[in-house]
Image (tube, rainbow, N blue to C red; front, side, top):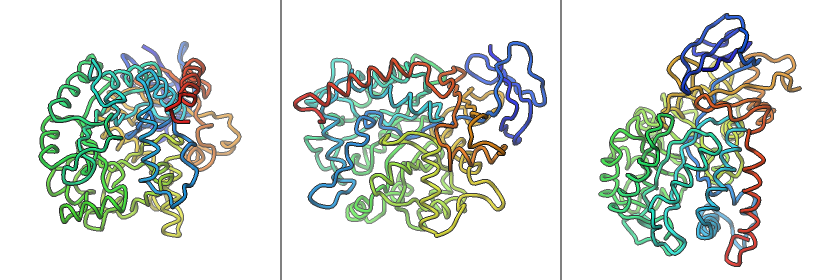
Length: 457
């Protein structure tokens, strides 16, 4: 058991003073308001929930900064994807473990306490299965446990190169499975979780490009009540190709054929028409927004204002991990809305804080998408918490919601002081407790990859 005391903390009832939080077996068991600190309490100035990252491809952290050179013709998502394939084909299990651990350290330091890993790098470089089919998934779990981040593992089913069941391309060979091999992989992943209540598993059909309708039906049956995540409507070309294949747009097709409900997370959902926006909002599913990656790839801007007016739920993810942090994702989300609408504080309620509104949305949406009891300082929730540096110059004269706004729109990751994931304190004094060791292995791995003849130089 441990007890934390915060001079100010954001509870489900709002900001409160002198909050004592008791943690046992990773969960919050008691929250006392207006309680003086007692001997042995760990004292902090400002406390809030930590968010869940609902979409990550950890191995892509190795690409950060290496896809920013323009080719002979216009660069798009589709040209970026070729660079990603080159990285994917070069990495060993040891490489993936080291890169994922580094990404997870940065997530924790940026205010995330848990992550949904959309994991599709399954096979050996030649496309053959490993002796242990879940070898790569196990390395993801090892990396998460090293870093101490909560994990919802989402093994990805990827069988086709585009709509209509087209055969996969050679460069997709590390991703590909059939239904039988995927079912074995999924069961092995379930075993790897060892019944840890702070970890979870779900199913991730990669996209309507990569699965057929019959395969999607089998995958949703396999998932049962587990979360289901799928890429949808990220790119205009994807929307056009889906219409050519089915006569429907991707989100509309899913809503018509897949019984989309609160178990589902539609990642990106960037290009929806008005009807799709309204219907997705009413479905109870979560829109998985990845604003930094979507901006980096030139995907487009999610219509957040109309979606929220319709009661839609959302969370944020770091996707390609080109830049990692809760504040950065939310800043990009709001700023994109401002640029499109030529307005300010688009995602705030009337007379309310933009930062507070967005954080409350992603705390709830992320918890739903990961099937994780988190996002609130309340008994029964996992102790996914963070504290802020009260001595940071940016916070002079600021209190409560102003602190949240300063975090998102000014100081960013530098404002995060400590982070707990399921009661485990993994960031202290703005540094992950194993930052140096994990970074050293990452540097070694990246040095070797860059020097390898066939590696991503």
